[in-house]
Length: 573
Image (cartoon, rainbow, N blue to C red; front, side, top):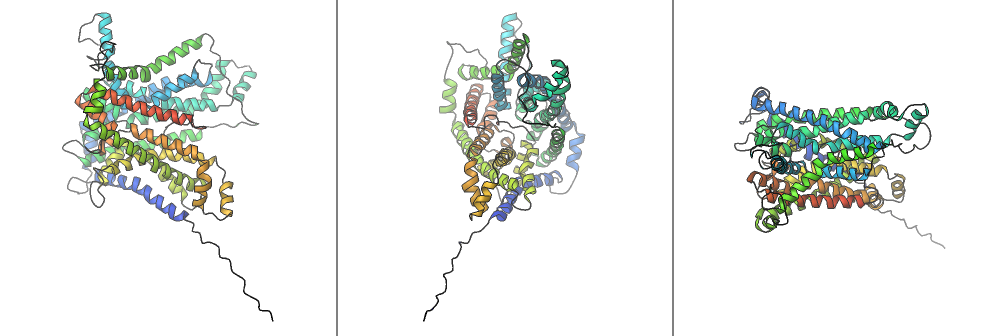
């Protein structure tokens, strides 16, 4: 008699798909980063010091000269900066992208140098150059002309001086937009115009320029936005001149005695106008475009400049002399001369400023430590956050991914100083008191850098086909396992580049940090600002050169990463 034994039942390992909990967790985190501080900002703008609801804060803002004057000044500065940035960047972008301009790569590299230079550091360098009494250029003017000691050629402490310095470090945004738009125009369009008998300049006027015009308009909006929300340069140049912009006015409302309600009310118009400008930019760029019928488009046809190419090259170098060459030389001169505004010679060269900064100034070690800790943490957490969110939104793995994408890009509409005000109001009271710790600065840096990191990682995900992840899931892996074992290794280059990008941005950030720092949480940018107020110009130059050296080391590393060299851009929208 044969007894049939029951078959052994094979049990599959139980796996859990954590996609939905992950979505909810990241949505909650983004709400903490963005919604919570902005909610407190709105609340404080609508209450008086006793907590009673009122509109008196806005009445003061729009009726008293102390607030109306900064509003008007901000509009003038932003409009003037936008106009002059376009006036300079549009011809430069066209020359570099569409003509046989000599050393075009060198010019692009110098534009990148001005792009990554912290604007507040550039403003300090121009103080060394163009302060009315002590500026190096004014001293040279008096030496060459024999003018009186109180005569000067330049005065950087004026409204026009402020616009000039802001333009020096804002025009790269416009240049990048225009140059990229011109690079993408297919050569066939211009060839067709030429075949129909149009001359070179007619083709440029009727084909090339109209196609690049949306990028120019978007660049003008970006320049306006950058000038409107900038804190460092106005704080360095406008305050000594006796006038405020909106960002410096908001900062002043946190000085003793603090007026957080008025600061919140003054922050809201800046926030609303930023959102409107970004939507306008998106609308303009979203409408541009053209279609090419046929195969792969050819390279752009370069316009020969003939003998004028060296004149054009000299003009471009003259422009780049202002944001890069002269300021860097001024910082170097101040760092190694006994007096910051004395011309450096082999006879008076000294290392006293270096010795003071690294061996005598007690705040240096703490500021460097805090900066590197915050840079590493913000870069690590920000990259992981951008990686996960871009995966969920690009692959559309769960319902609600659109809201997650919106939250990830929303901080781009929040000026740094406005975010600083919101975080200060949100985390200076129970149940979660973070003010006075590095955590509140970390939250600020994560929020500020998330949109750019998210957009970079989203572009990287779109380059990796989803079929690779589908094959992994067929073999039993969850989405998170597929991301960790399949997709993430393919994105290694973009992940490293995004990490470096956030690290560089954290080092140069001042707007939010100036609201949130304490004596124990100073970073290098805030230390430089403090030294400016105390007049230690040589120490400022040494720290500024260190900041630039670290920044350019990371930028060089990024450009050495295969496939990422051309993507180091931070253009809003």
